[in-house]
Image 1 (cartoon, one colour):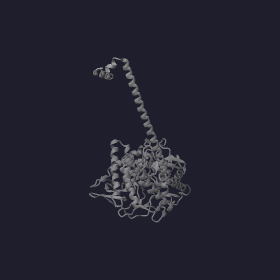
Image 2 (cartoon, helix red, strand yellow):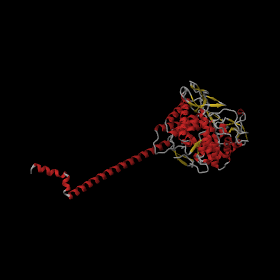
Image 3 (cartoon, one colour):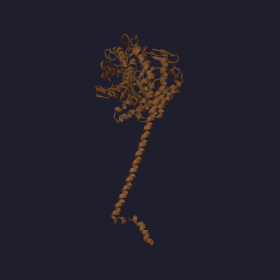
Image 4 (cartoon, helix red, strand yellow):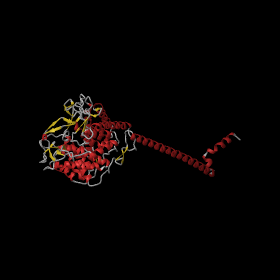
Length: 558
């Protein structure tokens, strides 16, 4: 065969014209191609399914390992799952892995709480507070077990089951409010009533509700004044309410204006409206003459219901009044029934903006105090709750104002953080003065383990997700560990510049400072802010829609 013909015979099978002239061969070619593509596609799908099966198996193994790790942590120090009074609850969602650094930091805070609690339990059990240096208990609040009651919800949230149960037994068997003691209505409300109600909301144990009702009934006569503005002091056994002499017979704004959350909650839990009526009448009276700038002096006459000439401040004796205007609105789930609280709060925030100044040369944002028409360039560490408050309230504004207040919150938080960072001990003084060209300087130099800055860092982290606030909180925690931790508990400092220690472990250090630090390093699903509102002593209370059902039915949301 000629070479040219042989080459043509070998190549004709790849010539399309060859198949067009022979339909049967063309059909056979299509059939062959279809079979090949079918096998290819089937094989590919099989590989994909096999791959997906492998991924599913690996995910199941990872979940098993995660659960085993969680169980190991539970048996050790963490306690992600716990049982208290027969109620199971989980502290974290397993869908999103936690940051290992946050887990480690949270465990460090929990260990610190355990150290503080075990010291109190060993040397001051049943007393109000521990004096760690002398290993003695002291009854700062009439012997009501303030540290114990203040710590109930902290123990519960941290999963310290055995400690919580021992504290519960003391409340059940030993706690007695029938004492011939002139108690602060405010301190007793926020620490004792608030602490017991929070323990009830978390555990559903009616023991705590009964005790809360007992002490609240002893406080109620304080509201029996011509104006409905309560006195600040009452004898727990005999009544006889009064005001301290140093106020000139006046009631203190932050005292009578910071009892609404607890007494409203008590009425909701017991079904008895008398508690709510007493504290809401206070707001009704104040609203009648509420100033255009929403800023009230710290002294109010309980007989006339009118303000006396005195300082205006977001620090000591003024602070938590403004906090509760916002939080009662949140507690009522932002319904029309509580809108007037929000309206009063927004009016007060307009007034707050008139007190905001910036230092030179570093432009630290701070809040002045006001006396008459003059401003004083002084800010208490107590006022460091404000960044958290306005961040929490910013979502109720329109977009522009919301961003404005959130930015202000972040600026103020930076100032409060520097209250700590600018001292040799890295712990804040009690108050600061601002002078032109010199930024800030420590005024009263003690540190008594206050929580306000950490509180604001907690809110800002929850609301922005910015981990910088976690880092700042950790730095503050480390400063407490370095300067305030002693063999048996924690103490304050007499001077933040020298580090000289005092001899008192404040009850709120366990109730507030440690709790906010722990939550700062916990997932947002632990005590979520859409279901809980914190009183001014950091006791979480369930949000209950006014006139409707509770947004949570007890316990901590998964």
